[in-house]
Length: 437
Image (cartoon, rainbow, N blue to C red; front, side, top):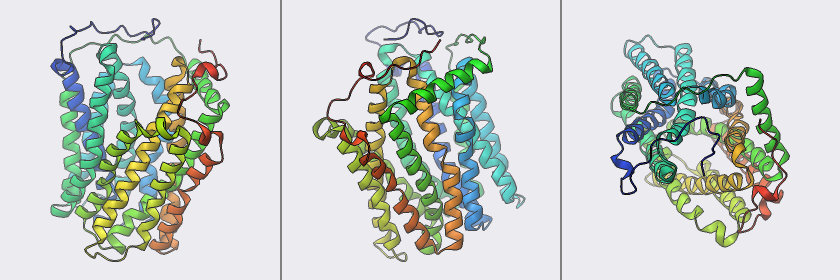
């Protein structure tokens, strides 16, 4: 049930027979969020390919570029999570879209004129990454303020469905545009998606009340500290943090080498690279379906460990591929599908564990803390991947970083998390959470 102490009054309830899709404001949010996700997932491939194919970046430079794009998660996520609560989410999303559209449009224009160098591309990548943190936090908070409580499940399902679709279509579209046209034109397409999101979200008519802005930095810091203390004091959540940090570190390193390995070692086109990355999307959809069934049948712990081992282990097959033969792309698609299935199965199961053992008043901070712990290691991982690709062969670097991802299921297997059964303990059965005044 919604908290009575929430500073955001619920919107007026719609008639029971009214469909969520008849709500113009929700349609505007959904279309804008879908366009934004397409822009984000397209740019995640376009900007590295821009560096590799147009600016001829080396392995170390590519690793640094990816680290710069990921650094905002480490630097900003905890503070943005607390800061967004003091602003209208519509305002935050609109400004984030406008900033990303302008940054990518400027990069596209400079690229077409031959004026874009690596330092400018680094600045664009950091800007897009930072504004994406603001948008992602704001859109997740906006739904609660926009629809009634009984519409939340359907609303979240629609938003997450479009995110999965963008995860599938974004890389494939970006790779195709880079191959058929050019990297600057592909960057312009990402800017167009953000512009469409800007126009759609501006059409939301519901005026959120301006949240009370009496909180000062010491209070914000105290609330962040309470979230950190709660997660580190819980054995299951502490293990999730460690396993997530290990996975994200080595996954970032792996992807840096992978983005070099596909075009330079396997001689694949931008379209083929995009398809290989997009293959994780259908796998993620299957993983979501399996996550509703397997943990209740085999236990949450065994499913977590086996899914992580299977999904992460699939990447060990990539270094065995040679050249651009007829079997290379289908093999990459199969590997991506298995990796996406295992990864999504782990993500959904971990979310269920977190939600079960965390009190309502600590949910957002627990989620932000786990995201911070996991994604915060990605810049260092990207730098490691670039270093290994530069100092070793691409094949050796990819094999090493892919093997490192298996540290995540090992950490889970050695912890009490692996023994979680078909029924999860609730937060009432765990130590009390720190009091949030």
